[in-house]
Structures are given as C-alpha cells and as structure tokens.
Image 1 (cartoon, rainbow, N blue to C red):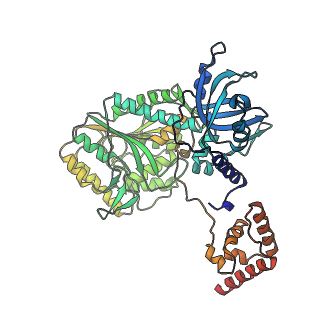
Image 2: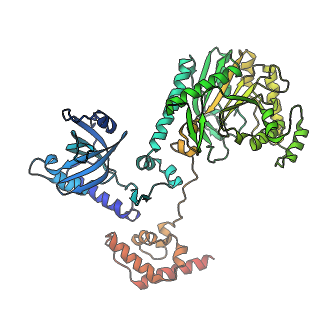
Image 3: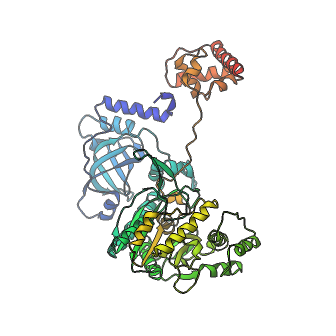
Length: 583
C-alpha cells in the first residue's frame, strides 16, 4: 500500500509494528494463547474475602490511561469489558523495564489484541480489575477504531452512520454497545426454533439452492449460468416443492432453515437474500399449523426476552397464544367497506378504481385482491393476527377450503403490520395442481413476471401420492426484528446487501507521465485532490498545487526532488493542451 493512502495514525501504527519486530517481538504470533477466564465470569465470581484468583484473559486494549509507573486500560473480550491494572515493576520485576516503558506505553495502541495473566482484585475506587503480571501482544491493529467522546452528556465522533455501520459491521460490533447482543439473540431465535422442531420429531434437511425451475413462490428470481451443464439456473426463491417431495417419499415432517433469493427491491424490511424456515408435516391441516405456530413463537419470545412480550416501534407486542383469526375478505370489508365475496376480476377492478388504486392489465384477480389488502389492511394488524381463507387465485399451491367454495385453507400471520409467516393445508391433488400451474402460466403470458412456472417433476411426485399435509414458511430475519425490537432488517443482518461503494475515478499513472510528469509525483498530485488529467487542466492556481506537493513531500518524508513552480505550471499547461486537443 502506498504511504500516501494512509492517515497519520496508520503510519504511526506501522512504524510501531516495525519497531516491535526490530525488538524481536512477533506482532502476530502463531501459538495458542490459553484463556481461562472472561470479563463477565471474573466479575460474577469475585469475592472480597476470597484468595486472589489467578486468571489468563485476552481481548482488545481499549481506553488506556498512562500514569507514570502505573497505568490502567480496559480489555474488551467476547463477553464484555474489564479493567486491567499495569504496574511497571510488577510487569518488569528485573532491571529491564522495556516491556512497560517502550512496548506498553509507546508501541501498543487502542484496538490491539493482548493477553494478560494476573490476579483479580478490587481497586480503591471499588472496581473489580485484573492486576497484570504478564502482558503478551497477540495481534497489532493497523487502523484506529472510532473513539466516541462524551462532553456534557453529548456523544461526539460516534460510529452511527447507518451505511458505514452496515458496510463495516466488524467495526460496528466492536465500538457500538448492544449490536453484538442483537446477533446473539438472533442465534437464540434459530437455536430455539430448531430445538422445538427437533423435539417434535421433525427432520432437518437440505435442498438445492440452484434450481432449474424457480418454484414454490410468486417472486422474481436471480438467474445464473451453470458452466458444466451449459444451462441457466435459478437461485431458489423457496424450498417448498423439494420439501413436499420428501413428504411424498415418506418423511413424517421435514424442515429447512436456509437462504432464499428474490430479485426484488431493497428497503427497511426487505433484503433480496434472506433466511427462511419452511416446515411440512404429514396428516396435518392449517388449523393445526396455526396452533403449532402460536406455541412456537411464544417459546421463542420467552427464550429471547424472558417473557412473552416484545417492544417494537414503541408498541408492546404480545406473542402469548392464542392469536386472532380473521378471513381476508372480512378484513378487506372491515377496512374498505367493500365485500369482494363472489366478485370476478372485472368487478374487483372496478372496486380498485373506486378506491383510487393504481393497477395494470397484468394483474389477475389474486394480485388485485393482494394489492387491496396490502394497501388498506396489512399495516393495521399490530398484534399477531392470522389472516385466513384466501381466494384460490392468490394461492396456487393451497388446498381448496373444505366448506367455503372459491377459498383455500391458507393463512398469513401478520405482526406489527407485516407478514411474518405463510402457511397452507397443502394441495395434494395432482390434477388440480396442474390446472393451477397452467393458470399461473396464463398470468405469465399477460406479463406477470412473478407467476410460477410449471414444475413437471413436482407434478410427477404428486401423482405418486402425497398424504394430507400442512406447511409453513417463516421469515427468520423479520422474526428476529420482532423479537429484538429492531425497525430495519439491516440491523438484524450481519452483512446486508448494499449498493457498490462509490470510489472516485483516478486516471492511471501513464496518463500523467505522458505529460512529462515524473512517475514518483503522480501519487502526491492525486493525494492533493487532483485525481485526473482533466482536473489538472482545470486548475486556476498552479502555485497552490506546487505548495501542496512541497507539504506532502515534507509531511510524509518522501525525500523526492521538489519540482519548481514553473515545472508545475508546465504540467498544468500540458494537461490543458491535451484536454483541449481531445475536445
């Protein structure tokens, strides 16, 4: 890396790195460092009347306070922080005090990983601390961490820009309190979910991520190319059809927790790559699945929060079973005053116009109803509510309702105005399923790019017979949002999808040397902010560039032979002539 790309602090840290190596200290040792205690464990087990406990701890050095022959610093490990007391004469009992005077005081920096051996005690100020008897450098940090400064109760230099936090999650986890806790809770959500399903006797399986047909949901897929087979493939949008094949094959219940990919928009509640759990159980229906889901979510909430409630956007949400059950057409009538029961596509289009909605010709009956519900109803369901009995046009993989013609045995679970789960009494009539697929293809012909494609192998599997089955899909990312009270999906994804990072365009070195500029001066010119030949041509004050180059040469100790002001003016003139000629 060119030294001009580094900040003063980064240069200082690299100089310290070299000094450590010159002293025979490996800043990145390979051997195991044995840890036998952690910050929280040390504090929990401390007793003033007990014998001093010997500990070996490791972590990042934070908030160092040097006071002559004795110093303090905070060590941050994987479980929290603890104060470390460092006495020169205890750390260096012999004549050689270099470890304290040079290494600790001058060559170590905030963010460095160190190992400390010593005993636990309570300071005169009452803080439980570790008295260091040995100090080992485990990893040298070359970039300074952001330091939050407090003055009069106001935080300065906080690492709180959302884009920076999401791009540099590794920094966010270190410096922002509570971030790591969110992801530990996410792990608890998945662990509890898996435990409940395993205890119920269901089998966790893995199904293909690359699929020849994007089936199991209505969504726009990502397309990739399989070079070995020379065919286009789809990143899966759902695991449903493969899991139901396994029910055909004789499994009692199967589930998968994995990534799905939908080539759609990104916003505060959607990420194109997301984690989903899908479960399918033989001989069950959607009524059983509603009861099972209530119990599942109640257990997860207790595991994460210690109770059945979570606070989301300032609202207290109760996951205590049971939840309200409301047919979708009743919900629409309740919110809009329009009863859609028995209405055909043309009539529903008229309702949409009366409601002032924007619709187009690609939308079939199911899509129109979905748009009405989404625009006028969905956001009003704060407490967990099962929206049930969807029209068949909205549910191509769902069994017809046993007593309500034109409807299906399907529910969506709404929480805080958002869909959390989608479940069915699964369609197992292969002839009916084929007709539903054909209707989806007719919608595709009309321009609906989210319509399902016929999966002939799945139809073949159904023809061998699938027992009555209920299935559900739960969005894990959104579930974690609800359980942790986060309002954006990016806060519960360790590395959310982001737009490409913007990088200012720089002309290559050859573009500058072609003007007669020595190669060694190209980097200093760009360091001064002149990134392109066009920018050089546009300079009105070549003298300022000349002074900037002298300052950079001195500041970074480059030792280059300085150009004259006339030479810099000639560079600008040559750039201007070249630019004019190109124009």
